[in-house]
Length: 356
Image (cartoon, rainbow, N blue to C red; front, side):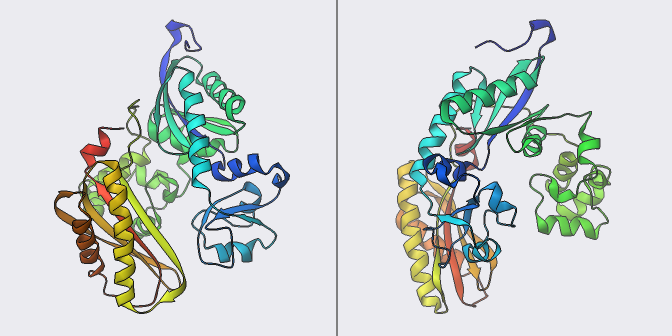
């Protein structure tokens, strides 16, 4: 399908397509009677049990319910919410339909996961392309999407968040200072709470502060790689590359939340080995060896930390993965009761990158 502009006016734009409340939206297609109600999807759908929210409808988000929140907390914040179990098969199928519809438009498309993708389009009217994408996805799947437009990936991804719900937003080098400058540094992609606190200690609180910060000072605080990257991101600079190669996961993980805290660390080791065995099967199915194993531990009430162990050589062997998981677990010195455990196998960066 041709781009929507005369050749002489064409500029290459990056568009970030993001499905709105994707998991909840898929459930609402199956349960239209729930439209307009606060809906929370997570675990086995029982808020009395331990588990975390996978997604929440916009109505539930108004009560402070969001992904990653404990299900019990979600129930306290929004007692009238409808709680539904996670159905990964349904989301896989819906995602496949969305991405098929997106590729039908003929633009260079890079799938990022279930509910988002980058699109590169040469056009003089990127908003027209964005509206075309939204209409086509809606017609094919009945799912709403938001589309961010930018001159690079960072701008486009942030723009899609500003476009929600079901809208279109353009963010460029020219508009970046006005749109992003006054926002907290934590609004930037990849800047978490810990990094935001460290920046605040340096007197850097807003995106504009970070964009104008002394590069050497930030590099001294965060390192020669992360420091310059933070400043570059705050200036709205980033890659404009879009790859049509199939999406390849960078890792495979399994985790479980226990209904009662585990205080016995011999049992913790047993559970880590059980999870590692599941991960090893996932790695074998990927037909890509793992290079590093990471163990996640969430203590009661809700403190989470991770430790990793690099394998002596890349491997898909279940024994090697199990031993690495135990080695990572041994790095934890806090022996408080455990409420959640996770094991993640990471693939070599070049192996993942070669697939997009």
